[in-house]
Length: 239
Length: 298
Image 1 (cartoon, rainbow over the protein chains, first blue to last red):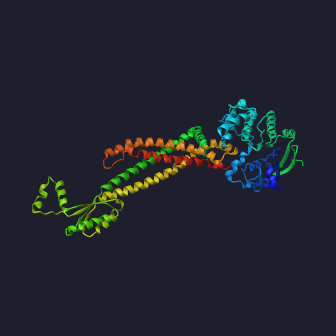
Image 2: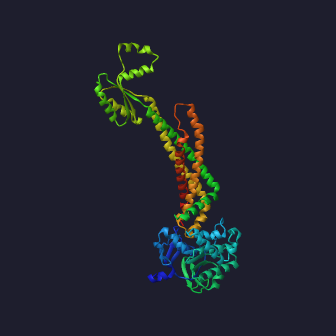
Image 3: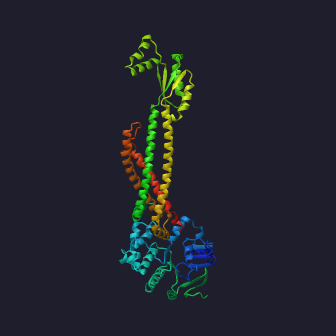
């Protein structure tokens, strides 16, 4: 897939013949090319060790590809200087399986933390945080600490934090991995809601039932290669 | 740094300091101990320097002129002495003046010079008393003085004391510099490692900050302020200890053994606090910022 000048600006994410081999010789990604449009909802699925986490690390510029090019929002990541990496990350909201909340801060402060870290004014924080908490149905838990919340609630806090800076794209790495099944549906429902508001959503997951039920685009990766990429796909490797 | 961020960074710095309070206080303690030792060596340095200065001020070298030198050459000799760069002051003492001084000094031993005076004999020569600026180049200056025509003899003052004092001072300076330098490096190393333990508990927070798009400096500033708090607290504590031990040990020792002049603490107090604060800040800030460096890899 070639990233044309016109194409780059309308596409949210392009992986162009991307390979990644780690220093220990592990080939995590092997000539991966994919293209995610602005406003899409995409599942990235596959067995453990398939290269899904590496894909996210490359996207966040936490790792560099061994070969190939990656574009996020039209920006060539290989041209990005180290000091500009934070600004790339501000375009993305990331949600992890282990929530990564700060235990010493309450729900409100955990969400406000993301705005503080990106130099937002106090006034905009006071306006935006309650709005996002309300959206995630967490208004009543604003003063609670992570240890007082269920897994699902903690993930909703993480989602609020990812959303609060109004990112172009939400990247969720196994967002339902530590959440009970009922809550998993709720989290997926919220991601779907976010997507309806024109935010691109990329979800890496193992949850077969959820993937199959939501009828979204599914990219299946195994041994570092894209084995299938289908709209309204199922959780399977079949082409 | 934005103005509104300044207060945020300070409050975060205080938070980091308090959230790792045992480690923070350990760091303050270690740094205060190092600064205390450094402070004492600095005081020793200052006192040796003061005593050396006093000796320089008091050192008088006498240049005795040949009796043959006519009085119209005195001015010329004087100007030749003053041309030597290391000469701070030069005073002419005529042989009459010298005899008067001698009589005044030995007023009670009148019989010593009674005969001489009666015969109108003055055995004392015309002379110049010379003060030097820097006694470390004493010998060179003496050599230059000895080459002036008409100078018959030079009486070096307290040369042995000066030489002894100089070599002791040089050794003390050397030890002071080295100990202060080594302590600076050692305390930086200890602080770095102490704070590194605290950083381990902050790594999760740093990691999250990186993922939400905080810049390196945004993450670094609070840690710099934390280091500054550690450094300043250590400086104040060490200053109090230095003040206590100095006034109770050194000053009292100086009062008992009256050979040396001891600097009053009030004279150097602000200088000591300033030096301790600068060292404390430098070590605290450097130690703190170096200790978080490896968390910036992601």
